[in-house]
Picture 1 (cartoon, one colour):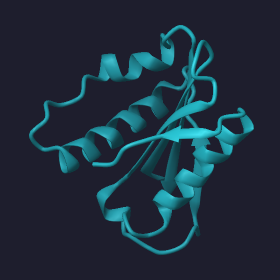
Picture 2: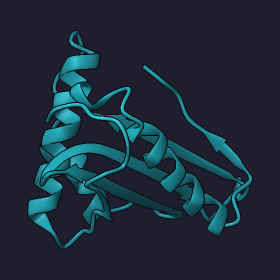
Picture 3: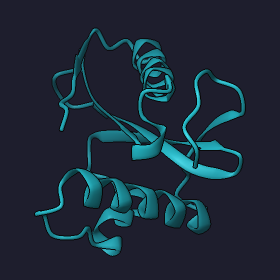
Picture 4: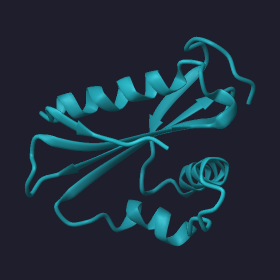
Length: 130
């Protein structure tokens, strides 16, 4: 994907457990990003990574969104919300395809995941960067 400014043509949608094709697309994107950002780390396992959609941790609800531009996966936003303890907290992660960085896509994905966290009553957001 070619980098560009603005939100034109960005589609953000939820990744659902019953959509194997979208999960495969999500996995391909996060694998590409990991190879780029963390080249010394071992590759991700598709069974372990994708299994979170079928078998989530008890007491935790995870939501994942995929962003596409011109039909290509270019970004991911994720929120992990505990319903057992730390009820004010949300763990979030945003990842953007290397060629789409500095286009505003990461900011748009972060806004999307933060709106979800607010809707769920979360007041503290925890994240990290690479």
